[in-house]
Length: 353
Ligand SMILES: NC(=O)c1ccc[n+]([C@@H]2O[C@H](COP(=O)([O-])OP(=O)(O)OC[C@H]3O[C@@H](n4cnc5c(N)ncnc54)[C@H](O)[C@@H]3O)[C@@H](O)[C@H]2O)c1
Image 1 (cartoon, rainbow, N blue to C red):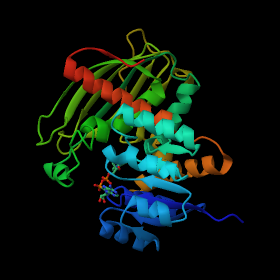
Image 2: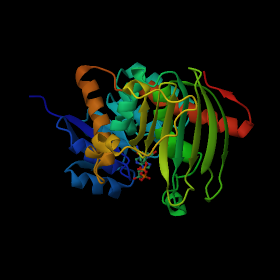
Image 3: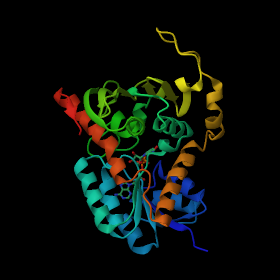
Image 4: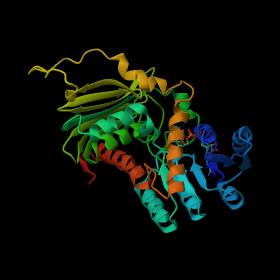
């Protein structure tokens, strides 16, 4: 009998609790150690799982027997911590964004190739049942020629959220605002569903918060496939309205709203052809939610999809495979976001490919 893979977490803040719970839910994973430069943060989390605590990543890497390190520190520190863990011979799972500059990300990829360890970047919404189903339908061609993909993130974050950590809302450590921090999930899904983005044009501004980076942004996208798209994102939509991914094609259309498939219309389902002027989309069919609703519970949503992604990494390590969201995949949404910032700054179209 092989013993479970041994995990260490660095950065014992908000999201680390989700990682710890996700690891604990998997039979082939065990949390051994937690490191944080605030030792009390590490101790608090470690105590819940009878794990060891350390006051730095360096100390944890030197002392603990670990197979996989998960990096949950502020975004602008990811490259430094991921590279240190990879150089120590450990596989690494890093929270989103992979890092906040392409230079840092390229260095992470270089060190990964050199060390031969595995690297996964968290994008847990790829494991939402609604996303999976839509991805499979698109791969089957069920939506026909894709013409339009939209990601709209209409959220609310109070000023206290930005004030709750010195790194939040800064260029140096958050790497951006509503795009780099909150909307990266939806942007990753959009480019996963519709394929690579070829170019962007954008506006971004800070309208309702006291922070350095943007709290509101819009972008127009052209995908390599020729399809067009939009991103509209804000953390100033009181009291928090919805996150929506919309995909439209000439044989079908789908809308995912708050991680659930709220609209799915497929020509192949044997409906009558729509009239020449089209149908007005009817009300939402509650049957669409059934499988998603069963897979959800209010407290466990986040840990459930994190667990699915961590399990994907465990399998990649066990079978010498590649995790679904590896380092190269983790770079894509960051490239799009940095292109949007450049377009907003220069007022020009930015080509990504
Ligand atoms: N996937 C998701 O849904 C999701 C949700 C929230 C946050 N995140 C990501 O997780 C990361 C952390 O976010 P958070 O909200 O948990 O932040 P946080 O501020 O709550 O926690 C960060 C922790 O890192 C520690 N830390 C800072 N510098 C360190 C260092 N040099 N060495 C060791 N520890 C250090 C801090 O003391 C703190 O405990 C960010 O990259 C964020 O984008 C992802």
